[in-house]
Image 1: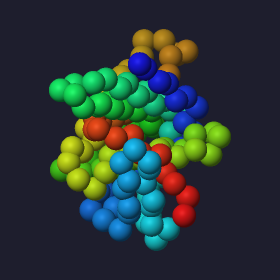
Image 2 (image 1 turned 135 degrees about the horizontal axis):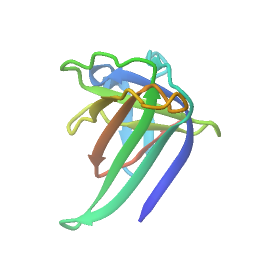
Image 3 (image 1 turned 90 degrees about the vertical axis):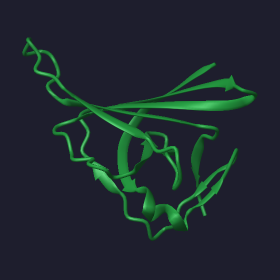
Image 4 (image 1 turned 45 degrees about the vertical axis):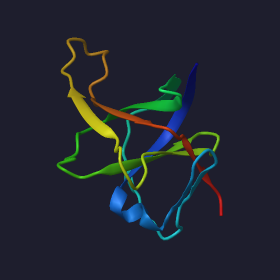
Length: 138
């Protein structure tokens, strides 16, 4: 079963070490501390989030794929990052938790052959876990 949550208009990031004060409730969502400071990424247009769920070894696994376009890449280095996504409707989703496995970030920097083509860096975030976390309001 594949769900596609479109119209993501805001992407923010935070290092996982800063999420220690958050409360993760599997199957329900996550309560984020109001004191957390996320870094907003400047995106080009809307971003997309696809969630694929499957059963593997009697466990349901959720695979997340975030695709967004950025004016420039940023240095991930060895940092473990989580991403907070906000949809136009106001719904918020968290990709990643304060523990393993962590999201994997890749960048594709393309030089289009056509002036009409989009000239931006594509950031692809992939993440798989046994839970999908929506952000719960306190």
